Amino acid sequence: MGRGTRLLLAAVCGVAVAGVYAGQPVLVQMGQDLGVARDSAGWLVAAAQLGYLAGLVLLVPLGDMLDRRRLIAAHLGLVAAGLAVTATAPAAWLAFAGLVLAGAFAVVVQTAVAFAAAISPPGERGRNLGVVTSGVVAGILGARVVTGSLAELWGWRSSYLALAVLAAALCVFSLVALPADVRAGAEPYRRVLRSLGGLFTRPVFLGRGLIAFFLFASFGTLWSGLALPLAGEPWRLSEAQIGLFGIAGLAGALGAARSGRWADAGHGARVSGVALALLLGSWVAIGQLGWSLVLLIAGVVVLDFAVQAVHVGNQHVLTSAFPDRTSSAIGGYMVFYSLGSALGATATTALFDAAGWTTCALLGAAFALAALGAWAINERARVRPDVLVRATRR
Image (cartoon, rainbow, N blue to C red):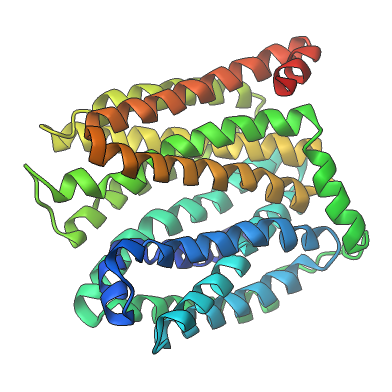
């Protein structure tokens, strides 16, 4: 895979996933403009995420039966349509519909990752996955920075309109520039869906999924709850200032882009173990938010480095284990991602009101420790394959 193809697929991932998270920094503005009650504004983000979860199950498996180049272009076009509907919606119900549509077809991210894995030589798969997956993190964290800035200048609708234009441009460019998928048309849709369900009985898939569940629960604990203490005493930061912390996370995540090369060299398991230990340690620094922003920034950089390194390693393992079902494997794996992120987000907001940020940091550390434990079980299973089977039956 050439450098241009890697960067194009990374851009596809970044723009698509940014549409899912673009509402987080501007929820108050969106809710007021659309007439949504303050205590219900969170559904503006949840709508896109619910669409995304449905797309993981119903749309991503299409990549195992259709030309993924055309599928990527079609999904980007529908993402653009959903974002445009949201940007121009005169009423809340239409904005919700646009967000669900954009969220559902934002699973083009997983199709792009699976496509990158499928067209990569085995010795370059990890490297290419590292670059393409970095676009996902750039989209998630960059959306916080860009959306907040655009909203202050031209209102919340401008960010969705800008993303719609970018998605439409990438739709055309992908159709022209990406290589054809010569493996297209392998299986009928019903069989592909059954195959996806069958993955949930495979120990290697469940093991990596369990790591991802706790990994992204820890990630969600930070990024869904961080604005709460930063907006309060003693910092009282604005939305735009809070959004700038996404730059620290982005720096850490992009620093882990080389983790794919480490996986290609056979060091993936060791790198994941070290990264999960770093994830656990990052919460010590993040927990000091009440008196030190410097330690918080250091913790954010380390946390996002660790999450990205483990995430790339997990996808390298799964696409290598299921080379004929890369789309289904990535889509199913991301179900664990979605559920973990949702758990971290909901638990953090509830805990912060009741017990403060220190308790939230302990929760994030507990999720990190659980991910490290799941990794240790997987490593034991490499020597004794019965271990993981017994563990996943408990």
